Length: 221
Image 1 (tube, helix red, strand yellow):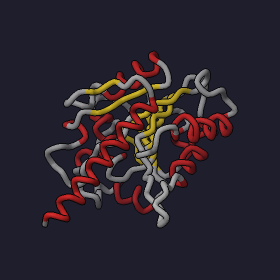
Image 2 (cartoon, rainbow, N blue to C red):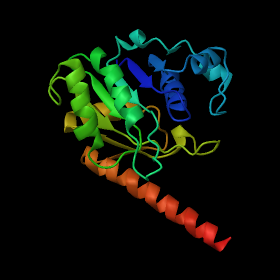
Image 3 (cartoon, rainbow, N blue to C red):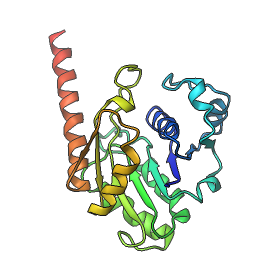
């Protein structure tokens, strides 16, 4: 059984972590914010996405101690990727997460990214950082997956369990492994992509369509 560490406990990572834990899988939820972790340990989620009883599950450990992730076999990265003032993607949090977890990677480990990125980031930006920090060989010793988040904050109907999830892996075997992690959690089903870059492109297209629709609605209002 996979021991899963979810890196980043915001409105994306926290619901994912508690829902994975609900399906009898041990989960380590890590966040760099001590105040955030303290609130969650006290049963308080200021985002309003998760109820206190979900935070009290025995199968989830919430921590700001990075050493707690050392025994994980799968790492799911859910940190934000905002846009800079120059309208460029800010990958600093993503790169920082890779630098943080890289030293803890072991042969056979899997890193799945959920952050919104442009095609190529997972394999060409994140992968080399993980390899350099771990001293392991990318795609041989350590493996990659990408499954873009599709959370609509505050939506109590279309929650993480009730939205079809796109998944991808760095090889067919790794895609099967990614599927095995998410399948018990996502009631709405999974969509298997042929490659990580295809999954990254799908997320960009989804966001573009959403932004165009919002712009059109603003024009008409």
